[in-house]
Image 1 (cartoon, helix red, strand yellow):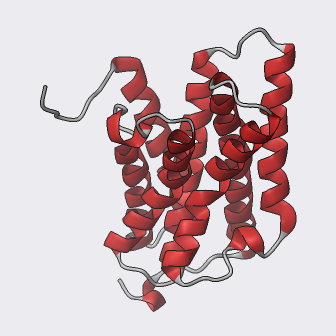
Image 2 (cartoon, rainbow, N blue to C red):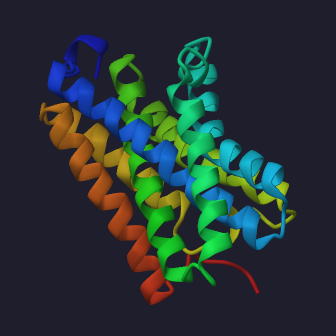
Length: 214
């Protein structure tokens, strides 16, 4: 599919894309900072982990697309959201005995779905082919989580968790398929988000695993 074949964003779908990207930034910041809290980091450490979780995936996507400087650094909005999410997680940890693990799983799945479709849509709008759309959607969704896990000295969840990057890739693929069918970007993003999020939550609930040795 060539660049001219891609359904172009309307003003409404452009606003939806921005809202999705910002919502994912905030959710991943809260989730990532919560991991930092559980790793017993101090306030600065929690903010750093939340910041990286929220922004690294989008930065990698933009650098790979040649969209520089990355969107995260062209406006203070994403940086403020990332720091705000970190503060929210820190304050909650200080005032609530413990955030239920299920809440973090849901937050992570929601953010994963949002970033998968925003990354895929941005790649699609740049004229990328299907392989690149899926790859960049997946990188956007999991890139921050990889850095988060490295910072807290654990094996990245994307390498061991049940259907994690696979769920992101499925959501990104759904965005591309919707574009091939010439559905609107809004429909594509909604379908991709539902596919990714529900697949990830179902994988956790039913302990779905990709094949592995040992």
